[in-house]
Amino acid sequence: MAWKISKAAVTEARQRGWETRRAKYGQSGHDSTYSRSTVDLSTAVRDRIRLARLAAVLHGDGMLTEAQIARVIDVDLVRVRGIIDEGHASLTYRPLQGGWGTNVMRRINKSATADVDRRRAGRANAAGHFERQCGGRGGSGTASRSD
Image 1: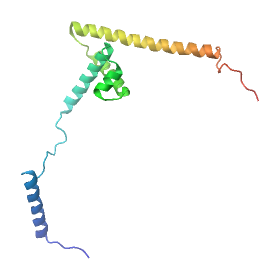
Image 2: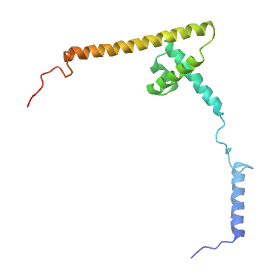
Image 3: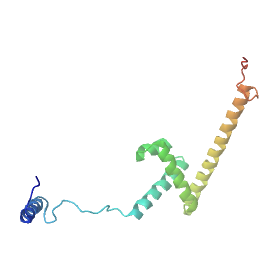
Image 4: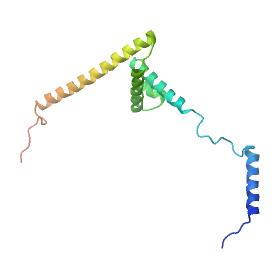
């Protein structure tokens, strides 16, 4: 059995609903706007780049560690490393200006070069350790089992 409601009854119910909403929320019938965002996208991108540049300078100049930056901006270390990399890319594209900026860029580049050298030395030490453990052989350095 289908319910039959007249158009007049539906219209009257809708009208009462809107009157109730307007009494509660005001003339618009709702308490907020229907816009997606009040922040301009270009502002958000610009702020992200500024944060990345700042993080790269603070870390590169030795003022803060990755863990301290992570704590301040409430993200994990992997995200901080990505932010710092993004900041370095931005600084490479548009370096800091002025006397202070030139000195900071010099220190950042020097520390980045030192980091690469430390990583290379670490890999060489690991390879040397492996060679010492294995006796220069490709195996594990222990006698092999023969069946």
